[in-house]
Each structure stands twice: as C-alpha cells, then as structure tokens.
Length: 175
Length: 188
Image (tube, rainbow over all chains, first blue to last red; front, side, top):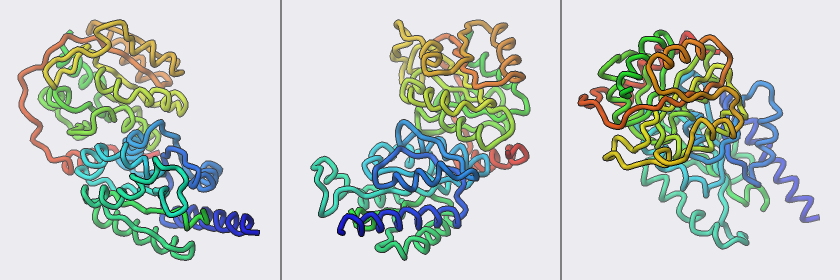
C-alpha cells in the first residue's frame, strides 16, 4: 500500500515536471542520469519535439546547453545535486558571465530518509553553493507547485539573463 | 606551423562559418588575426569548447567549427564519446595540438608523449579523424571537411609558444550578443 502511494507520487511529480518544462518552452536538454529524475528523462527522450543529449559529466552538459542557447534554443540541464560540484566552474566562468539563461533542474539527495552517507554533505551544501555564485534557487514543496515554480524560474532566468536552479527534493518524489 | 598561422588559415577558409575558440592565447591570437562577429571567444570554462560546439551544431543548419586545444580536450575527453554518439553531421572539431599548456607557461601535456588525440577520437567512435602538421594539408583538409558530412576531428600539430598579441577587449556579454546575431540566420 505504502509502495503504491509512493509510486503514484513519483509518477505525479515526474509528469508534472515534464509538462511544466514543456509549457515553459524548453525544447533542448542535456543531462547526467539520476534515479529520481529517471521518469522525467524517459518522457523527454520519448518526446519527438525535444532534443536531448546524455552528457558524461555535468559541466559538459552546461557547455552543450550553452551552445544550444547560442543557436537560439531554450535549454535546460538535468542533474542530481551532487553534480553541482562538477558544474561550478562552468557556471561561474561561462553561463553566468556570458548571461546564458539555462534552467538547471536538480534532484536533491541527502534528506531525512537518505541512506547513503556520501550524499549528505552535498545535500546540505547545495543552497550555499548556488547562492555563493549568485544562482537563484527555486524549490516546489508539493507536486501542485511544480508548474508555477518552473514558470517563475523560467521568467526570472529569461528576464535577468542568468542561469537558475529548480530543486526537486526526495519528499516530492515520495522517497 | 605556428598556431597563429593555423588560425589565420581558419579565418580564411571558414569565412561565413561560426567558430568557437578555446580560451587563453588561442582566442587572443584569433582576435588579433581575424576578429569577426562569428567568433565565439571563450574567456573561461577550460575544456568546454567542443561541448559548446556540439550544442551549437545541433541548433544550427550551418557547419560549426571548433578550435580546441590539446590541454583543453584532455580535460573533457568524455566529449569525444558524446560527439560520436550524437554524431552531428555539421561539426568540425579542430584540435590545435602544441603538446603543452601554452597559456599557463608551456608545461607539457600528455600529447608530448605517446598520447594521440586523433586515435582517441577514433576509438571514441568518430569515423572521420585526421592528424596533420603543415599549412598546405590544413587548407586541403578544411575544405574537405566543410563540404562533407561530419563529425570531423582534425588534430593540427602546431609549434609550442604564443604570439605577442593583446588581450581581447570585448566583454563576455558583447561576445555573446554579436555571435547570437551573426548565427541567427542559420537556425535549424
């Protein structure tokens, strides 16, 4: 019973995120796979109107999406929050100074129910890291908030010409 | 061949094509021999030239040229696998290989030893790979690459050392804005 509920929540959050990204106009994605984001990634890959590229590292994904933005695409990166560590230099010396409006969709590991100790430190550090390089973070608390939050993040990113992060916590996925 | 001469040849043969250039002296040399709106000068993010070129090539119908370096590509070897897997027909990746970290004092890279970037690209799955070391071959190979389906990886062996050229007097925003305008008619 509990499993069924959490599966429903997982699907609901994944679907809401995918639809919100589409309705906000994102048509180009690069990602490093993550277990929480796996359904979102599947939906993106199955969508004929979306281009998606699997990157070997998160900073590579930032380079690829920056290139796509230069060519006129609206682009987003999907990653686990641990990948933020691999992204800082690319954000600080490419996306931010060149004013590239990337959307970074980040799953957040390391919450109350986290079982893997190596996820805890980055889980705590994520807001501090983002704010130290001036990247604003948006975090929906319920599946219902996802559409609005992504739309706000998109608006901010486009208007301010800067990358922004949308953080999706484990709770949101029922994990 | 000096790197600045290879860059001069690039500007000559790639007129009308967008060019993403690696940071440091390569971008400064390119700026001094042939500044144009279609040059995207990197001022940071070492290693990402080929990735920026990959994303750009998917967004555009036009051939996209990348002038990468050996130290930079060694930092992002995974990019070769991603390029092979994605296989954009319009991407031409040149690696100006001086076997050293030229901008930071000339420290040797692994290509000064047995490492062969054209062979690495081939093993990553890129079918069209070349290594050349003279200007005549560069012009020939570039012309071929511009009219045939890629992705192409061309390793251009160049001499160590930087030309005495000034800093780039453009802000990152200005580099981006004029580049976006210049490529806007090539959107796919």
